[in-house]
Image 1 (cartoon, rainbow, N blue to C red):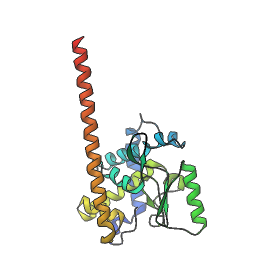
Image 2: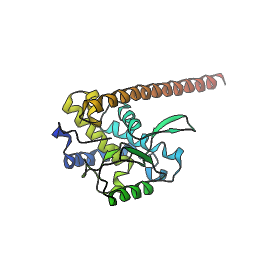
Image 3: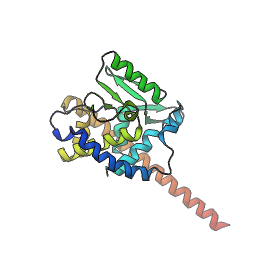
Length: 226
């Protein structure tokens, strides 16, 4: 979950970040033209929703030129849940965390309603969405709860923030650690977890790429044999 890091003023400029998001959003709009919008997945269908964060995060990584899979790994550490059908972990877009407990809601509307109830009860420290952006420490990150739970907006904000942390610390691994906390006893275990997930994510990607290449090769062999 993204918390205030205290040591870096560079990552506490939400209004400057929003200006960068506007340009990044234009780029991602081009990248996602042929992909289904996240709104189509706001149905409570677990299989359909399981791809929403991944799609948005891939585009955010590319838009901010982050190393492939690093933001995916963070999302799995933040809002990951297990898909029994595909037997893999995936980030859940309608995740809400408060009082140290994360809950997976079936739809965006249900997640928004949950956050409104928490705020009505006086709870302010709340993490939301694919990347678990903290609404207390980042009050100007989004214009509304609807935007906060938009996977593209949520992922874009996280990508921009991670980029700034990386620049401030001159290290990707330290950026990952400070994404979670500026306290060593909290960020060190988190960093190790994300690095492990990143390794798994890259391995999954390369295995899928090899599988697709092998399938294309087999199709070519069959065609040549006709």
